Image (cartoon, rainbow, N blue to C red; front, side, top):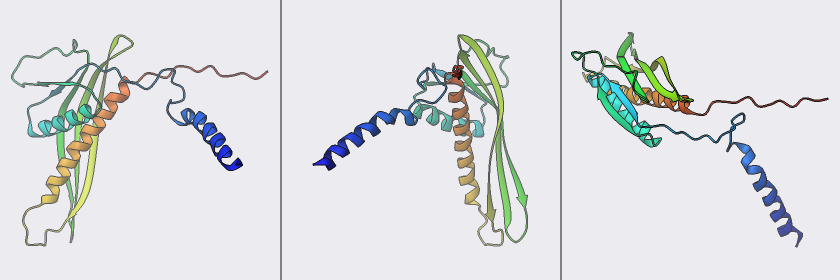
Length: 188
């Protein structure tokens, strides 16, 4: 008879403590919600930029952020980006290969890009530029008969996806509510 009653009491105590275990981050006075308007994605017209843009669109779509495309044309006149309320501009996407030759060749692929975020913070436009770099290494045996390197193509796709994930994470982090000062309790 006491066992079911004890379980009910224990369950109710545990349920009342549940909101204190991470549903609301400490130091934030507002819930962790995002209010991001339609974001314009600005990329160059290159194969690497196209691959990163498609992956970034998927990442932002999973976060329920609407996107709109714009391509930078090198021959066009300089376009003003100051009027954009929310945008992500990705420039200078570079893929570099470093090889350490031996019996097995160690290949390190590095993908980097300059990313400019434009967002509205407290009613004021805010611009932040970062250089983001992702890398991955693998070994390739050049002593085998096969002349192709399918692993390199798989690593490129992984790098494009990883770069897009880092861009999306930084963009969402910029739009989260800022920490407000929590008054500290003073002891008499």
